[in-house]
Structure formats: structure tokens, C-alpha cells
Image 1 (cartoon, rainbow, N blue to C red):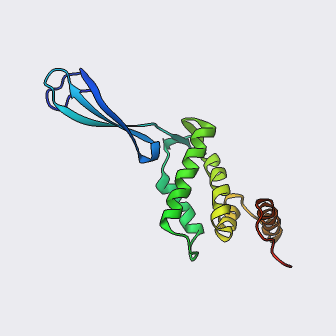
Image 2 (image 1 turned 45 degrees about the vertical axis):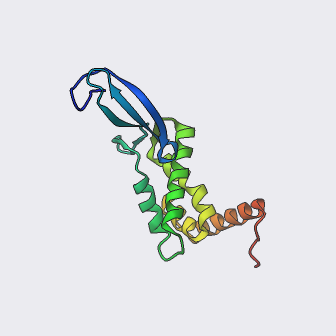
Image 3 (image 1 turned 120 degrees about the horizontal axis):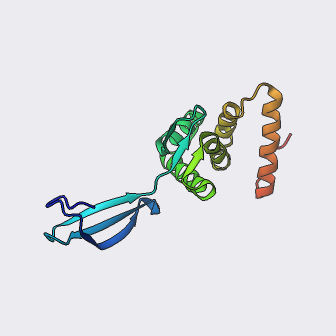
Length: 158
């Protein structure tokens, strides 16, 4: 790490703190040459490989944007969307390490979105899973009911 004051390559870490819900580390450093103190932030990289082979950085904002479309007209707060995106990122890092296929991000979104808002889940799933017919919706609704019963929720009355 180069000192911003004198350009020396020699510095020592004076203090380290976890920030951004544990996704980054803030380090306070001191230059060994001029004793200037400066701060660095270290983030772990999560790369996404898209279908066309392009690799780009993971973006929580893209997750939020995609889920927000599915939640349009629903009472889902921005904070809930941010929590969902954080949960998705943590799950991806746990399951896939530092590189993930774009398709797997959609899969990681489905579970938390189902628990957040079932209508938004159906909207997202219908696009993500390429529903072709009413039967696809019926099958997914049946799956939602089963999931709700397993969680101890109420089953819809027919």
C-alpha cells in the first residue's frame, strides 16, 4: 500500500474494523517513512459470469432493481429490498465463493422473495422460470401453498 503523502510502500496497520455488515474491512494505517496516517478499505470481490460469457462485479443494486419490478404496486419497503439483496449476496458467497453464474443469482433470489411477498415472487418466478401457461402458475401456487404449510402458515381456503 503506497502512502498518499510520501509514496513509501512501507506501512503498518494501526486499527482494523469490519464495515458494511461484514462485507468490507476498514484499516487505519501509518506510514513507516513519514508517519502519515491514512485509511484503506478492503472488499472481497464477487464476480458474475453472464450467459454470454462476460464477467462483471456483483451488484446489489441490480438485484434490488430486478426485485423492485416484481414488487411494483406491492407494499414492500426499500429497507426490505436492501435486506433481501444482502441475504442473496451472503447466500451466493457461501454457496459459490467468489464467482457465480448469473442464473444462480436468480435462484438465490427466489427463496427470500417468496418469504417477503408471494405475489412479487410469482411475478419474478414467471419471468425467471419462463412460464408458458396458466398451468405453470397453478403449479407454482401449489408449491407456494406447500411451502407455507411447512412453515406453519395458513393454507388458503378453496
